[in-house]
Length: 412
Image (cartoon, rainbow, N blue to C red; front, side, top):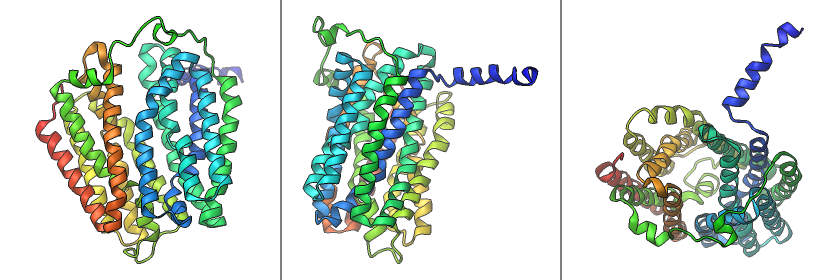
């Protein structure tokens, strides 16, 4: 028995080492699975829930706009708190805040309460990401950090794929109102369960940095970093903003198009929409690592251009879909927008000065997401004019963003 089993252990240990699966990393991944899965069960169907509560298109636009704006604004306090009290403790705070948001949605069935609760949980990923990535950087040596960050990104897509599927089943069982509320009950339970698990698995000896303890100061600030951006990075930022306008103008209304619009001969059910989201995420996961592997060995610009083309094509494809089976390839196309996303992030770092890569990366996302939040708000007004107007505007922004980067973008 020992002779048969002995080769397996070294192989298993080798696999664990290759995947950088330290105990604290496993803790982070479990927290992502539990909290994100709970959130995605109900969050993807919030536009339908807001409509059921009488909120209308403007409430959906407000929700989507807040998601973009808060994702930008929460990153800084998330990182600041992680520096002040440590990643392990800050994750407890973030989980408790999300639980309060979930319970507000459960306790108060009104669209105004849903917006208030969403402020607390809808950007959990954004506020927790700095703490998680800081912990990964502390736990892993430099040669393993890319794998650690990649695992974090991949695991995040599991809840994106499975959560809507489960949420759709809840709606099928209990209806649009009660089904969404039940999904958020489960979300609160899963977030609460994540707290003791992360305390057991995650190990951290927190030592406040000089900046966090007040004995140092920030070397720069966002406005100074914006002015210091090289022209090539500014070109990428402009094109990325245009592409995100293309994505966010119809983003919150995709579920309404699929489930409520008269344009579809047979509008899809909640479980079917969950399946479409699963297909989208599965497509993204399958191409994520292979494309990143080849992009590291070739020029990055073509990969980014192709990614932007996929962004631009999705709203056009969506407009011509008239049944569930036509929506399947459309959502596969949507999943292909991940084709060059890791490459785009790597390009941001390539185009940043060596001593300012982290700060420039954060500033890039702050500027992009604050501006793009306007697109999310504006999408509601375009939808009120007509779904076709909303989707056509998205396509135009997608074409503009792709053309800008194709003409002005650079690799380095």
